[in-house]
Structure formats: structure tokens, C-alpha cells
Amino acid sequence: YVKTYLLPDKSRQSKKKTTVRKNNLNPVYNEILKYKIPARELQSRVLNLSVWHNDKFGKNSFLGEVEMELSTWDWGNTAYNWFDLQPRVHISQEDLTSRGYLNLALKFIPANSVGKTKNASGEIHIWVKEAKNLLPLKPHGVDAFVKCYILPDLSRKSRQKTRTVKKSMNPVFNHTMVYDGFQDEDMREACVELTVWDQEMFSNQFLGGLRLGLGGGMSYGKPVDWMDSREGEVAVWHNMITRPGEWTEALLPLRPDMVKSKAKK
Image (tube, rainbow, N blue to C red):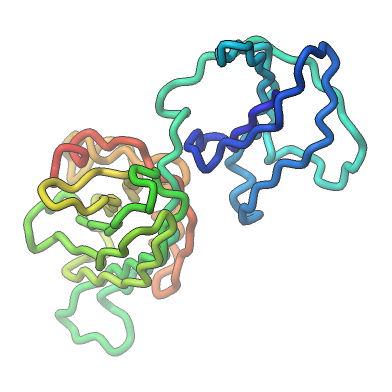
């Protein structure tokens, strides 16, 4: 039989299989396996197809696999294509498990904007729209909420949260957070940390997160471990500060762990 995943998601929702064709070295399946996914996500997805032998004792033996980068696939190609099966390639645990995506928009309003008083400070607006394809910790969906800090400030005053959306892998929050007290120069030193959690009675479960900033490992002249934004996260922050007063929208993959954030509830 053939098994497929739409990487980096290796959750049960991503796994699809054909039927088992018995006693055959040239099996014909003639089956269509379908995924429903927004076109914009294809740039970051890889289709993994693996072939397995299922013996009479129920044991599955790996026979070979093929991986196809969907960002480079010719979607106008309607011909049948043959690919040589490859031996299994080791993939890191981080790559194996997708934590889903966060759909959001950011806007920076400078202190000297029209309508602000002389002594006013700038504002960062964070519009948390929705999360998609969250890690399925429970069969009925997680009870998700998003928590935000603007680093280096980890005080209670800096913390803001969305409401909790119950029993969903694709929660819609549509929540805007506003932070003030910023000058233009702070935009190169600060970092927005967004983490997604599953709400539990005794202890919230970390699902994934983002850090939006310029990266580089430094803030206000000091080395910090949280100024570690990845390429896509840096691009969002850079677009925000170079286009003041305008929303910068993005759909970003959630990190599977964030070191400091993972331990903080």
C-alpha cells in the first residue's frame, strides 16, 4: 500500500493511505488521495509518498519513498509521472511534526502620526486572526488561546491574551492587541512573542509559537537568546516598520518549541 503525508505535518489528519494490494509486485491502485489546503501554503509543503508491505501478522515494512517539493511542482502537468523509490531519509523531530500556522497582521503607528499629541508614543497593533492545523492533542480538538508579550518586557503588564476557542484545530480569534510606549528606535530592539496554548484545568499545554523581530541576537546592546526570529518572521517585522500605518499580513508556521516560552505558563 501507499501512504502519504503533506509535510511538515505528520499528524493523523495529514496521513492518507491506499488500500492494500495483496500478493503483487506490480500493484495497481487507481485511487485518488485528496488534501484541502490554501494555495498560499503550497510554497512551504512537501508531499511524501511511501510504499509499504503489510504482512499477515499486521507488521508494516518500509519499501521506499518519494518526496516532492510542491513549491516547484508544475501544476499544469496532467501527464502520469514515474519516480524511483528512494531509501528513507532521516528527518529531524522538528521537521516531522508541524505545529500548524498562525494567521495575523501587524501595524506600527509612529509617535508623530497625525492626530497624536506632541508627547505621545508609538503603538504596535497585533491582529490575531486565526490558527490553522494545530497539533491534535485531543480527538475533539484543542481549547486554544494565544498569548503575547513584547520582549524584553515579560511583566504582567506586557502580557495580553485572546479568548479561548474550544474544541477546534482551526480556531478563529479575530482579536486585536494594542501596545503603546514605543519610539521608532525601539522597533529595532523589540520582539513580539506569540505562543499558542491548549487550555487545561491544571496546566496549559504549549502548542507552538512565533517571535517577530529583526533577529541578530542583540537587544539594546546586550546579547539575548530570544532575538532569534527566522526568515519569515523577520520579513513580517521589517515590512511593518518600513510601512508605518499599514497592516502587514502573514501566515506563518508555528515553531515546535521556544525554549523559554515552553516552560512559562
